[in-house]
Image 1 (cartoon, one colour):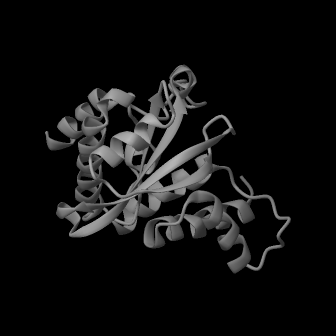
Image 2: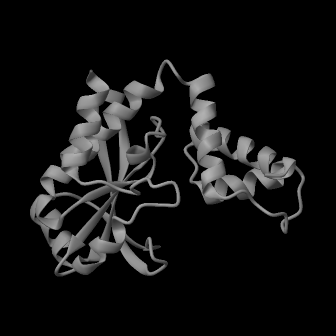
Length: 197
């Protein structure tokens, strides 16, 4: 990776950890802050993730593990509540790079896309609906909730992305490094248990 991309990745990593930005906006803002042209080649997400891991190891090693556990526990609570929709956790909370500013991203795989909304309404949970880009580039509904997280003494954004049931097969394909991009509740329980050892 060239030095400009490394600088962008490092600056973006700081924004991801310290401000809770997503990778795309963080990369664009980092390039702008570094005075680079809007046409500059940006680092890929793997490079930013590596920079995030390095930043956490240097600056957040004393706080991040507990914050990650709190977010994973919150995610598991929601996954258990929505078990019938085959929930899978993705994003920084799954990958282990989340901090207290990170949101929780859970993919739901439904036979009927509106069934998740109906379930939330039946539970008396307030949510906002938006359209987002899914993991295959398609448009999917995101149901966003501001959920209390007592362990962090804060509210956390929990985003439920609603996919067709058949999309679950593609969701579990490993990435170029052989890592699973998301995991179900059983896999999350293993991560939580391993962290407690």
